[in-house]
Structures are given as structure tokens and as C-alpha cells.
Image (cartoon, rainbow, N blue to C red; front, side, top):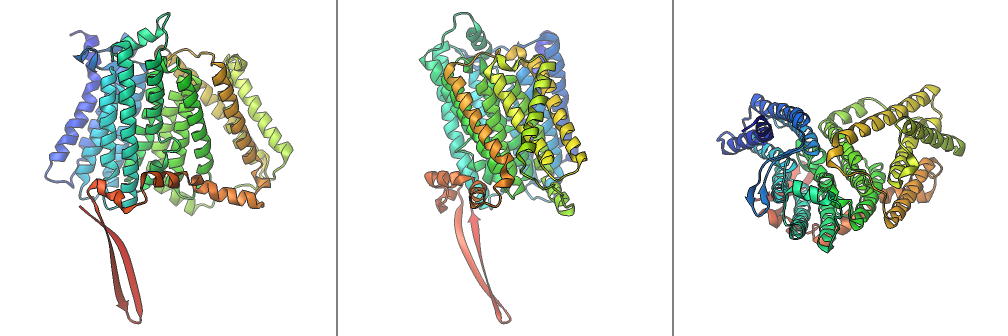
Length: 554
């Protein structure tokens, strides 16, 4: 075996060590004992292997192992710019989460069980990312989901976590079926599940979509929507706040990204389907808009972070619908590290807020100041576009991304320009705007350069897709404008009522709960749990105290 073959097999060591480690803990007699050094050491080896894999990729280019299977379906390992980039991200996140979990679960009687499940889950994600065949993607898509489920129900005495896990379980199985049918359609049409063969075929001159492939792209979008908790199936993600914090970090920073990753992995096929692009733009765009607005009204840190994740996944899928896949992957990676930090430090953040009163300057609601903020944001974007050689009007997708960036920058600037704050605050806001713009353009250019060989070139959208983008941007612009002039609406009854409805997510989750019966006690039966209500009354002097609790027994 040559050096290229050895480098190709090297990434397998990382998930293999995690599986061995997880299996040994599962079989251990001491369920409360976990070695910090062993856990951190295995995770650190994974980071080293991922970096070596990146060096090998730079040296030899895209590599894919021989198929172990039959009739074009089976298992193979693929190392390309996309898979190695996500592999590095997962390896780093795995190290951070495993290290955090050692202290987080200190004193937990089932600590070894948790680490066993966590290690095997991370290994499954790595094998999913490195898949070179559709059959392997399907297999580890399902395995990853089942491993996550075992983590979500780790504390089986927490009713809300059990109910949320049930909803997630049902939706995940629907996603599995959708992915299975999509892969069957692709296989019947192309005659293989090998990714390299599929990519070459879709890039060949004269390639034409047929009914089976069009159906497959729609089903792939549905799979991504269900995986990434898009509206109206987002409720379970908001309700899993009772799960251990490391699980929340892994879920929001890692496993939710499987939806955008699947779109990017199959991007050569997805970009040929107008129906798939329409679905991604409509579902991802509306979800991002809905969740980001609801996020602003949430008093709970973890619930707010949940809505934030829903919005970010929606925005990533929206970018995939635009055909800007490099920006979508950049957003996925940035969101992963940001969200892992947010969850793992959520307790500390609450303490900081409690100990330090945050002073926010009062908004004036001056239309001229608001217009000035928007003008500065637009000028900043156009200026950086010119410096990076981006022709904003060349493609409607690029223009759409640019306008969304302008809307975001306007929020930063309006908070200070349209306020009674000091001039120093305005300067800091402008500096932050310049830094955000510089970071985005620099990182997006870098992501495009790195991933260029594995993602399709940006294409001009069809007329139908273009009008869909225009309609979505109009909605975004209207909501942004309402938010900018919100100080004028605070005293109105409409604004107060709207805030209440937003805080409850327009009750979409309650409606979905009723549809699938999550509000009934039978929700626990699937987990082999029995619900019992236990009431106890005791007297303390002249006072009687009654306590009612819910008991869940295996």
C-alpha cells in the first residue's frame, strides 16, 4: 500500500478509538468512573488525525477508497475539502465537549454510560461526514440519530426531555424514510451509490434531470428540513433544554448541521433542481425569519439559544437554495463553534448578567437617524464588495445575500446612532460593523477557495426562483423595518399583543403537539415508562402541606 492509501485510511483511527473507548465504558463494572486523561487523550488524537488528513489532502488532492460492498452500494471513505473541513470541526468540538463533560457529570452515578454514548455518537458523526457512498450515508445517518436519542433520554425521570425526545424520534424516522426513498431514486436512475461516480456524471456535458432525480432532490430537502428542526417541526429542539448541557452543545453545534451538510454534499445534483431550490428558499427563509424574531422575545437562555439554532439552520438552508454553498458551509462552521461556546458557558453567562447591570441606551425612534444607519450599512457592504471584486448586480443570489447582510448591519448601527448614547458608542458600533464585514468577506472568500473543487459554480437562478427570492427579501425588509421603528410601537396595544404571540412562537409548537399527541400521558409508553401521580399531605403545626409529584418507573 502506498502513502496515499495509508493517508486515506488514517481518518478511520479517530472514530475507531472513540468506538473502542465507548464500548469499554459500556462494559465497565464501575459506571461512575471515567478517566479524564483517557477521554481527553482520545479526543486530542482525533484533532491531530484531522489536521494530518488536511495536510494529506493538500498534498494528494481528493481521495476515495475502494468500495466494500455490492452493486455500487456499500462502504467507502472519501477525503475531500468538504469532508475534511467538517471532520476537523467535529474533532475539535468532540474534544471540547468531552473535556467539559468530565467536570459537568462529576458525581453522576451513570457517568460511564453517558461517556459511552457520547463517544459513540461523535464517532458516528465522523463516519457520516467521511462517507463515500450513499448507502454509508444512510447507515450512519440513522445510527447517529439513534445515538443522539440515547443521549436525549439519559435522564429518564425528566418528563419534558422524554416528551421532546419522542417528537424528535418520530420526525427522525420520517427523515430516515425520506432519505432512503431519495437514495433508491438516485440508484435506480444512476445505477450506483458511489459519490465520485455521481459527481462526475452530474458534471458531464449533456446531463439531464429526470423524474426520479427530481423526486430524489425534493426528498433530500425534506430530509434536511426534518433533521435541522425547520418550521413547523422545530418544537422538539426548543423542548430538549432538560437534557445535559454537553448533549445540547453537541446537538446544536454538530448534529443539526447534518441538514446543510447533506445539501452541500449533494450540491451538484441539488443545483439542477428548481423544485429543490424553491423548497430550500421558502422553508429555510421563512424558518430563519420566524425563529430569529421569536428568539428576541425569549426570557430563558437555553430556549433562546434553541430558537437561535433553528434560525441559523434555516439561514444555512436558505443559502443552499440560493446556490451559495460555500457561504452556507462557512455559516455552519461559524455557528457550530459559537453555539458550542454559548451552551457550555450558558450558566456562567447567567451569573455575569446577574452580577452586572447592563445599561442599554434608550432609542429615540428618529426616522432620519434610522435612515442614516441603513445608509452606513449599505455603504459598508458596497465598499467591501468593491474591494473584493464582487459585482453585486451580477447575480440575484449574491445581491440577496448582500441585502440580508445590510439588514443585519443596520441592526447594529441603529442601536447606537438612533439613541441617546454617547458618541463613543456610535464609534464602537461603526467599528464593529466594519469588523463584521471584513470578517465575512475574508472568511467567505477563503471558504470559496478551499471548497471550490467540491461545490458547483454559482448559476443564474430560474425566473421562478428569482421571484421567490424577491418575495422573501421583501418580507425580510418589512420585518427589519418594523424592528428598527419598534420604539414607536412600544406604547401601542398592537405591539404588546404581538410580543406575547411571538414569545409563544405563534403557538406553532402547541398545534404540532396536538397533531402527534405529545400532550397526552401516553407519550411516555414508547420509552417503557409508566406515569404515576403521587400525592402526599403532611401537617406542620397548624399548617397542612400537600405535595404532588410525577413518578416515572421502568
